Image 1 (cartoon, one colour):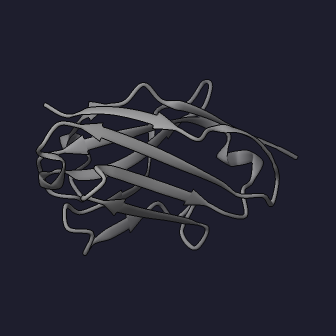
Image 2 (cartoon, helix red, strand yellow):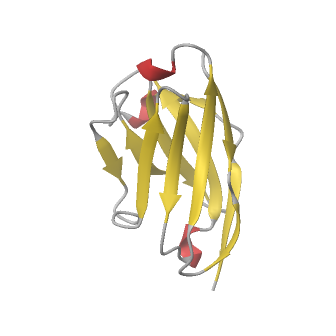
Length: 122
C-alpha cells in the first residue's frame, strides 16, 4: 500500500505556471508507475500524464502535451507535474495516482491521493 498526498494547487491566471507535487509514503514507491488525473465539475475523470517506475517512459494527454511535464524522484518518494501555459480548460481537481501495473494501463491506477484544486482564470 502506498499513501499519496498532493500539494501545490491554487489559482493562476491563464498563461501562467503551476507545479503540483505528490508525496508518497511507504517503502515501495519505486515499484509504482505514477500518474496524474483531473476532474472538472460535470465531467468524468480524465488522464493527464503518467511516468513509469524508473522514469524512462512518460505519457501525456494530447490536451497537455508540450505544456505539462511529469517527473519523479524515487529517492525522495515524490512525483511532480509542472504545468506551463495554463488555460482555463485546465481548471480541475487534480489527483495523483499509483499503479503496480504498466504505465499505460489506466485501470491499474487504483491508489489515489486526496487531490488538489487547480483554477485557471481567463
